[in-house]
Amino acid sequence: RGTSPREQKLAAVGGGGVGKSALTIRFVTSQFSEQGYNPTIEDSYRKQFVVDDEAVTLEILDTAGQAMADQWYTFGSGFLLVYSITDRPTFESLPHFHREILRVKDRDYVPCVVVSNKCDLGRLRAVGQMEGRELARSLSAPFIECSAVDGVNVDIAFRQLVKLVRKDQKRQ
Ligand code: GDP
Ligand code: MG
Image (cartoon, rainbow, N blue to C red):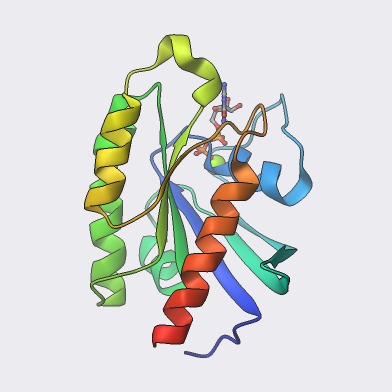
């Protein structure tokens, strides 16, 4: 498949404003920017990460908009499918992103983690946790509630994805 098991290409996908950039940058730099992130900028980041005592070099693509979608999907070996608990349409659109990834890769399974972001905004919640879990189950993906602002579960989400990609690489 061209990439060595010591390298993984991951991508954060999902609707606008769900926190793809905030999560990616929180993971890569352990920081959150109050200034926010330019919603049109698409960038990739590298990070060394150790999972199960084994080092991996991650290249993480922070996607924006739909124009490059086919390239991202081809590029990625694992995906964070991100929605915001405060924005119901972003939840409802996740199956569409998932289907497109499978279609472009022409596979019936691709490693994904469903990320329910902005869990610090519980009082504005528009998507129940059980609904999120159900959706993840229907996509054969683990479910995790995160907050890029508070740094809750962000590393754990990436860690789970790295493990799934490793398993998947062994199967191929
Ligand atoms: P993207 O379009 O998916 O890349 O979303 P951004 O990362 O640019 O985030 C969109 C907005 O949501 C920004 O104002 C962020 O500060 C805010 N945001 C991102 N993640 C969180 C989070 O976990 N909690 C809260 N409260 N706000 C967040
Ligand atoms: Mg962004």
